[in-house]
Length: 108
Length: 132
Image (cartoon, rainbow over all chains, first blue to last red):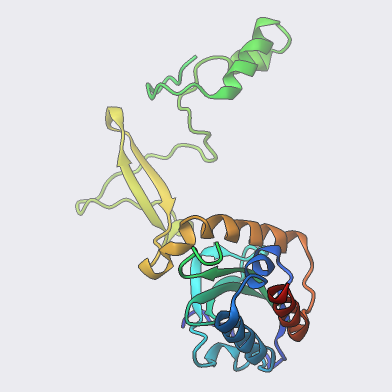
């Protein structure tokens, strides 16, 4: 994990409204859906002081991408064994922009 | 009309300048219709740099730490292009269909204010969709 910003403790508010996120999420099957939903629920209960340290999410800064503000880091977050999400911090929100199964044939 | 630096590139804006010049509408446009010294739009005045004994030149503090691709062109010219290096574990973000999804997701986020989602509601919708 790198480039983790240090800001005051604040509950993480999830923004999952991106059509790119929804399109894949709504097509997830049984175990994948359960795992992704579980990870999102776990993130929702965390605050910003410990979300990056949460085990299993494997935060990875994607340095070649920048959030719309041109500065904030975009992170890859492991939401299940097979599925990653891309997200960035926007104030108290964690905004997921897209959801990416490792093998796209199932949900691509 | 081609670039005078012999790279054989015809900048599209030259056609417009030439058309204005042909109509005698604008002296400046007429001047611009001459072949440019280089087809690369310059944003700084040329500077002369001497290469040091170890083969180094200084190109300014604002570029410190940047990764640059160096190409040697015809006529001994050198072209420096800023590039980024991407870890192997992140190459998937540059491949389709992921790349297009990410671009669309970022464009959507740029145009849409953040709004909290009820996770339970979204999960319930996904489950209902499965039952249909």
